[in-house]
Length: 442
Image 1 (cartoon, rainbow, N blue to C red):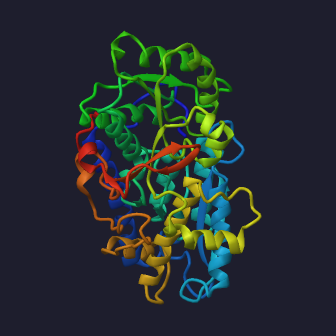
Image 2: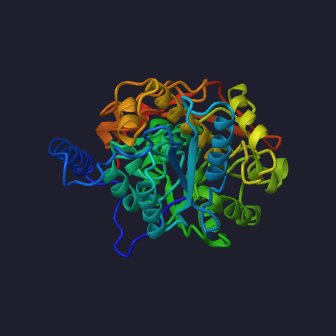
């Protein structure tokens, strides 16, 4: 779920003034270089944002994600992107032009993430769409230098909510943790948060605590854990001791896990540990758990039974997912990498919905990195069939006050595991914008 900690760790949340002006400065420099080349018309070589996707050739985009690593993997995202391209091309393409999807494995490391971005630039991609990477410091400089939009990232790094070239479709980990904390706050005793001992993992406690505080609760106990461990007995023991300690009183403690793909591994250790302690409630976020994980953990008899789970989107049984399922059925029915319950696949679908509407807004005009960004920056309102609120990206949004100027969708859904099934626990969306505005992230 998160990048490995550097030798000299620092918070992912930089001081507000630096965090915002740095992104603006990068964009201004790119814009200045573009203007200079346009006026001189010679000596500048390829102008960023001009060459890719022009003419009658295919419109080129890229989707990347980690695959076959020891931490979080999202193979369904690039696999679905390829299926989407087959489907859109079989149905007339985008404004009559073929869509070509490049895929790349970022291997959960900075070198590969940067290599993916450089390839996107080299092959004239007009956007990076529906991708997952923990290493925004490695890939964003390349995209920003070439003026390539990053549409629908998974939301695991703060740069996805600060870069002017980022167009997020969900509220990322901040919204999920804030929403979960707000729900658990009024009813939980002591809360333990088990999260990766990484740079991006450092960003999670303030978000959960913002939600807990909104619910009238004390801050959670921060329990760090390796993101690539094969067992978590030590962490499970510590989390249970805190959640059931003397401070619990009459309130049932809660254990919240946000370990990405390693959540299932943690819950296996947790299942064995909890037998020696009083009962506790559990909570997690989609992306760390889905229906397949719940089934593998024992369904109704497993440790997730009764857990609250926050997500960005409606449950998979919602009719709003029918168009995505149609694409999977027609173009990738036998591809086991593509699971319609996977939030990575769902995010990729929504990201390509955004990209499609951006291209259609050009009304047959030239499709380049520059024109795609222009369509998104000029007030385009993107509808997703009820999967998200209407999306529209301005220069800054309400959450610019906490350093998230690009976070335009802070809605979450509340789900619960009942009788082994992930179902809606509350109708509709919950907007956690006000909760996030009070987050202490400095």
